Image (cartoon, rainbow, N blue to C red; front, side, top):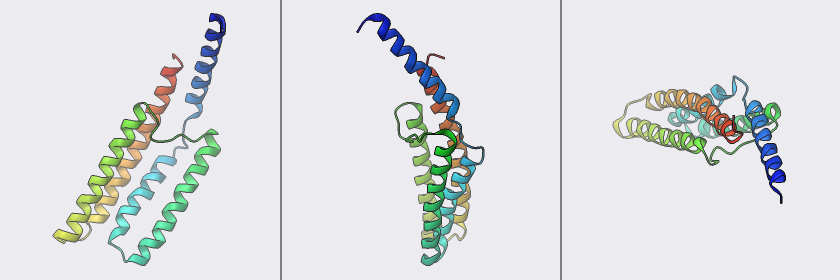
Length: 149
């Protein structure tokens, strides 16, 4: 391959990344909806098992709906664990979720503080919503930097 070919191909990759960075914007309601689904999953843990099972079905349908909506709007789907800044954002969210869920479970089931799952759900909803916007910004920044913008 000649140097002009390499330069042209690199320019094409950069242009594609720049275009992806422009398209990779979820609907404004997307991250809050994901936050509500995740927070609801924690909050429902104090309910009887049948209610938890019903919510789990709602949760899965909601996630599928969010994937569909994102793909429809952007024309793509991106793994949350892809390399780059986004992996750190996803890891931080996972740690926050596990810690919050664990603390809520301990408070509710061991200490006997009723409502801990509900409070944990609110915390998870807020964290997930904020982290969603942070993840999206990190993804777009990675793409822009790869494009040389």
